[in-house]
Length: 403
Image 1: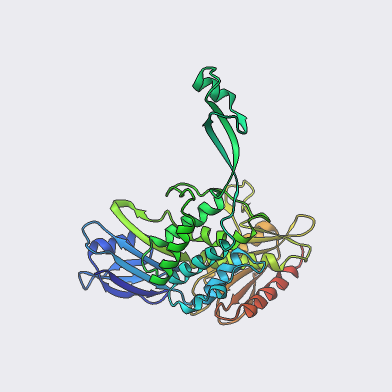
Image 2: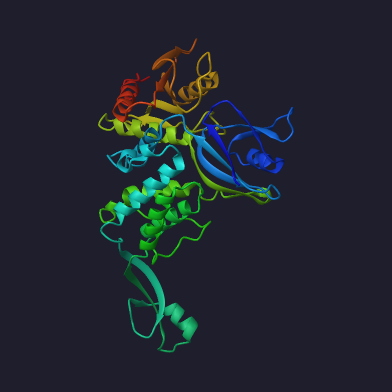
C-alpha cells in the first residue's frame, strides 16, 4: 500500500518512518527538505518549502512508492486566481470559472480546471489550420520539391515529391492540449470523475499526433482565429512546464505535479504591476538584465524595471515570496535592492513580499539617501482587494522621484 505523507508549505518539519532509499530520494530530488533522524533509525524529518502539489517518489529496492502532498498556505481558489491573472491579466481564465474551491488539494483542482478549459475550447469542434506537409504523390499538389525529386527519382516524372499546406486538425494548438491531458492522466491523485472527463477529452483529440515526451512543445501564437483556445493553452503550458521532472539520477522516478510558489508570486506581482502601469506613460520590462560593475562582470536581473519616455530607468521592483522572520524580512533583500538602486542610479527601490506585519515600511540608507520600500501583500483576500493593494504599490512606483 502506498504511503501518503501530508505536509503544509513552510510549516514545521514532520517525522515520518521511511525506507532509507526513499528518504535519500526525497533529499536528492529538491521536492522537500529531508534529513534522517539521528535519534530514531528509519525515521526521516520532512519539511516542505515553497513547492506545493503532490508527487509519488519511487526508489530501487524501496518497495512501494511514497506519495508526498504539500498543501499551499493560501486557499486553492486564491492560488488559482494568482495563476489565472499571471497567464491572462485581461479578464481571462479564473479559478472560480471551474469551481476549484470544491477541491481541497491542488492536483485535483488543477486537473479539473484543465478538463473544463479543454471542454470549453473544443465545444465548437476541434480547431483547424494549415499544416506544412511533404509527401510523395502521383499527382501534382502544391509545389514540386525539385531537389528531392532529382535526388530520389533521378529525373523520373513519377512519383512526385511535393510540398503543400494541408487544412487539418493536426496543428500545434490541439497537440498541446492533448499532451496536457495525457500528462494529467499519468499523475496519481486525480479523482475518478475528473479522470473520466480527461479521458473523454483525450478521445476528442484522438486524431491529433501525440507530442513525444522529452521533446519541445510545438510553437503556437495567439491570434483571433484561435482565441477560444487561449485560456486552455496557457493552462496546458503550465501543466507541461515541469513534465520533464519525472526521472532523477540513480533510477529514481518522480510522478506528480508541483507549483513553485516563488515563481507564481513573482509572475503575479510583475504582471499585475505591469498592467496597472499602463496609461502612466512608463514602460515596464520584466527580468530586465543589467550589470552591477563598470566592467560588466557582475550580472543582475531585477524582476521589474520601469522606464520613462526617455528610456531612463525610473523605478525597480523585486518580488520575494518568503516567510517573515521575527524581527522583519531578511536583511539580504535590502542589500540586494541597494545594489539595484546604486547600479541603476535610482533614489528609491521597492521590495514586494507575500504577507507581513505592516502593509508598507521604508528604510533610508545612511550616507546614501536611498530609500528602500518594503510592501506586503496579503494573498488570502478577495481578488478585488488584492488588486487594489497592487494599485497602491503602483502609485508609489509611478511617483518615485527622478534623480
